[in-house]
Length: 514
Ligand code: GAP
Image (cartoon, rainbow, N blue to C red; front, side):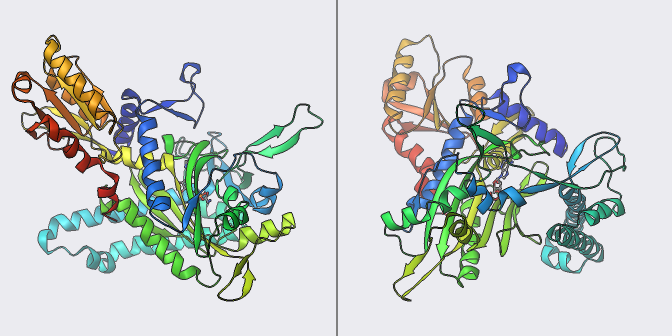
């Protein structure tokens, strides 16, 4: 695949062609930054959610789940700071009339410096071959150090200006860096202004008696307001966590990049309640633990990196992103935030209810501190999907599109193919296999077209196994099992299929890699 842009276009087209992601309300020309998941997409999304839930809730005896409502009392958002501080700094280009997030324009500029560093690394790796030491190169090469120093200084200044609400300096920075509108190339910018991202709605039958509500911009607050309910009814002892997955809504202005930045999206969040003063140690623990979860899926260690925040959200005393190498570069995939007692203390103040924990060991009550892990399910979907889509040149010179999804996440685990569809014996045997396997796995039956074309179709849809039933199957109860990634084919007994597939798709075998 040629360049990044082509690769990304291919990802979007493939997601549509194979029933993963559709533009919302497409017959009406769609709705910007809103997407629907198709028959395969919904399964992949569910499998990612389950993989997260199993790792976070089922495998931790001190973490439980909840499912809070999307609508919350409007004071929630006053207390959480979202009414006053959940803003994006926006800037308009006077010539193209396009609106941008000012911080994203600057970050994209720094991203280009990072790309230059990567280019230098590639060049040097080629030149020095086996003798190449990447860490040494990164810490000594003058050109790399210059790019890095420049990028760090820019991000530091951006962080400081945003922290101090010095929007004039953010504009000055954009002008000094000579950042141009990506669409028109013009450098004719307006001032930077703040814009609240929450969607408002109304609850009630008549206009006069309606209550103004917000669609939740994060799922976390549903956890905070239920902190005492869960702690008391579950007799939870600190440290303990509450997890939830669910929809969140943000009126995003920079709504490009497919499902990376959506207006309606799903989060998977966990709030871990801890003793004040222990946040450093838990912050380190959850950063490492979450990275291990990502690495267990085998998308490649080089595709992840941490980005420690300079600019902290209004609630945090430390924060880092796990960034992933998307087709358009490294971007945030998950956030790990040390939220102090900000949220619970705020809810205490605004509700007038005590939200404290009595620590029997210390014989005192306190407002717990919170360590949060927060990942966008749709963003994780994009990470998995884009990384898995590969175009391979085969030995005979032809190419194949193959979606090398981690088998544990694949929507369909195996496709059962009778070699010849007109042979009733093969069809019956294939359907019997489907009916047996479907108790344990999601499987598909496919009889249309020559078997080679069916293999290609299943490769492109991401199915890890094809099981072909042929004349020999009728004689000795064996089938051919074909592996999507290697295209290797093996003859196995029908009785063995379940065990062979289970070995490769079993969540336990994948999570054990953590
Ligand atoms: N409770 C903390 C919180 O919401 P965040 O960094 O604003 O923190 C957490 O969001 C994660 O949610 C992000 O790392 C990202 O994966 C996902 N996310 C945020 N905004 C999104 C959007 N507009 N579209 C898709 N995913 C989004």
